[in-house]
Image 1 (cartoon, rainbow, N blue to C red):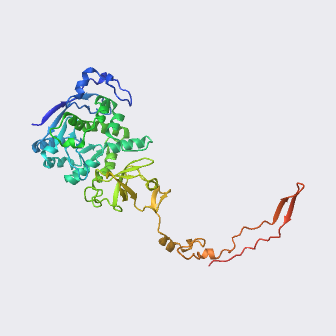
Image 2: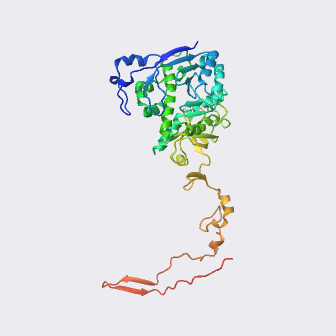
Length: 436
């Protein structure tokens, strides 16, 4: 039998909400203080009826899955839902990572699959769900989860809806610069009531040591973090779809494929774990994660190492990059702490920004330009030790490039009058030559 914990809280109408403000302790009824801190007190919004937005809350059962038979039962239940929220926890995720728990949530219940205690075999029944293209998997920033599932558990994801990409699309609709927002910011923007009631401001401050996720049994704070990271995803998906005017979410599902394919990045360029393969000059791919005027950060699918560009001149070569774009780079150096690798864009030193195409392009080498346009050379600049004789068009020009003298000179006289003097200079007659 599945281990069940009851989650939920009512009394939503008594709370007063203020846009974009942190909830203080005095705003909370005394009867709610203890209930919020209890183990298993996760809240989720009631699914909307039609186009109406229901702000009420209900109780959701939380089930701890700790055996393969239980996981099969969970899979059969979840396969009956059109959408399922998905998240995971672990000390380090990504291509070389390891899962501790895998959380799933529907509109009726939440499941916590204990991968650490049961081993990778417990995920085998879930492959039917993860590979099902007809069931939408709602995640927030699916890159690291898709990478660890594909590389460590041979289970790629299909039918993904990434709420981080949906939030970036909403920012674009508002005329704002898109960036990769965290789950707390998306929740605070679209469901402030849930953000306040769940005390996400306190949840963010209480950081958990990464290795603590692999300790057993899981303490109450870990269980709360695990549940809170997944239980709000389905309501957020519905809210984002309404804002984007896409009830089915097909636009975001198409864009989310880009983040799912992140699992394949650098599989051949950086096959080994750690910094041993990150030598200067090594070619790799990098996905832009964040950019500021003085620094840019990149995801490499090589956790925990992060790519960075800190030199101002090097940063100019990434001017055409948008957040989420993938670019070919090479390693410049490794930071002393070995947590960052400094990057150069491929073609460094020969890149130019094309204002028509709004992208960086490689300049053609000098030897290729000489073959294409032999007359482009100038007699004023030499190539190598001997000066160039110039192209045929320069040879036909007059050899004298002195400025012409004026034919009349005006000089002020002693008494203030202007004297006019002819110099006798006659400009040379133009030479008309035919070019055949």
